[in-house]
Length: 348
Ligand code: NCD
Ligand code: ZN
Image (cartoon, rainbow, N blue to C red):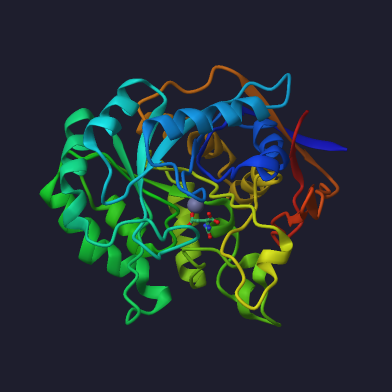
């Protein structure tokens, strides 16, 4: 029985991995069912580096959109030390590409072609600042001497803050923030800075990965931190601060790649993200803030209009049942299990 409904503007996902080929076909409907737009991560193998590659990838995504769904992929370029500022400017001005993604080399899945020496991308970053193009940052240092749980905090101090002082007009998205340090950095800053927060980082802390046996399906990068950090993320997501918005970082990997001696980083949340978020906001008595987090703050940061269309969320008196996995020709991809009942769903 329905106990409550909530109407919000159709949400967007400001950080999404769609992959390519058969995986793309399998995961895309899970996003287009609820989301109107998404910032598409460029970490394919090989990565999406040029305007041409971004246009071609966009075409492949459009081909895979289920008929009847409206979806706009907002493309990104993967920054390398060889990125050509002119090509990047053209990509941005053509309207296909909305941001460029900075991966410190080795920081995460498919980041080997990322940046080793930040000095080498200064001309590109200067151009981005000039034309108003957003830099999406995977904010973790890769120094083996730095503990994996401290890599975000150290990145902010050692890389991000000096960079923003040097180029204060550069528009920056701190992607998938996981710490109270990142929250404090955003709230304490001025200038064009926003931060995306994932669904899973609002729901799990590092115990999910390590207590009662090792649980590869809860492993992602940046890795989930202590409970106090999760609480800081929930507080900022449900606050009135417009600089925090949804980026699911839904990152599908085949189960056989997750459950391995060297399992891949990434959690697949597209299927139940809106139900998870409604539950989190409901538990915080903050359902009135859900629309801002998932549908208003993101477009504002990316200087786009919010969607016109609405969706309706419904709360029932029995938990919603989601599939445990989705199927691809190469095997299943496990859907995020929030380990708590979800009473919400999106009305279809
Ligand atoms: C992402 C992936 O699988 O591409 N993995 C992840 O753990 N989030 C890469 C990323 O966004 O870091
Ligand atoms: Zn990601």
